[in-house]
Length: 175
Image (cartoon, rainbow, N blue to C red; front, side, top):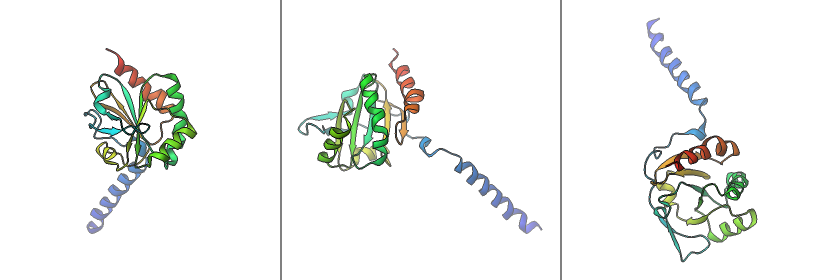
């Protein structure tokens, strides 16, 4: 009887961990970057490859960094939300075009609308790696000091925008 108790207890514990894990939302994976300085970068502008943009250019502003690609199906899902956000002009949105061909990205923005204050190209994905991106789209809310305050994994939805992102951005804008 005793030889079955320990294996049974281990099995029950594993089942409990599995049950709890299945109940977690994969879009709410905690990011180790929250509360830490956003990695610096300097990349070519998508629409003007001879010009550069650096993360430090946004110091003093609360802004969003949206990682997207023309080949990304989920990016198409979030795109109308970003277009509407751009019309409101409430927060600057910088697009990080991830592992994409510039000509495909510019054609995609021309077809679906360009919600970005500006877009930069990350063709080799190194900046995405620095930000811990493991799939597109991902969006980062960055404060005035260049610290990441929020990370949205997957498409930005109207609900996420209204309940999480914009309230936090408004809070971060306060002096």
